[in-house]
Picture (tube, rainbow, N blue to C red):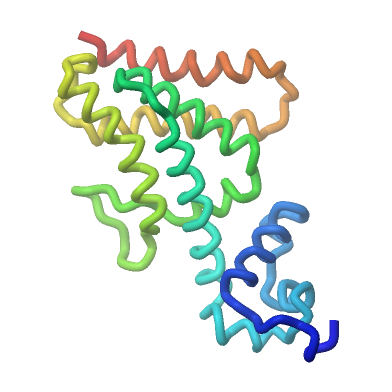
Length: 197
């Protein structure tokens, strides 16, 4: 498209095109030069909108975490244990639907108090997603449905279980859908059983 006919380059459009490139060709296919070519500009033109590839990936991951949090927020379960289970299912489903984007998301960790990560590495969206899932754990402990002294440890254990299932399912075994669904429930139920009163 001739430059005169092209809309002005904007950060959102760059991130959206990077997202599409990653979805269709994988994370390894992303380069600023390749992205610029897809947008019909030169690579240096991108630097007016993104500092570098890392900045671009952070923006992309932030958007994906926002989408995941929206799915968490859509879970309407008054029982906090049922909400934990639903959040874990949502998490695994998101990973299955967005395998390459899921990889991008976990280039950036959440901020986990009292733990700390180097400044600038943590991602606010990742922190919001973790806190959304962890809040159900805290409510379950407060209600006496889960017995634990450290809500962060419980939330990390549950996240590790669901992340493990998501990672295993991305290996492409071609398991029946009902077995895939049963896996996340099995892992979550087994973990929760260790915290039951």
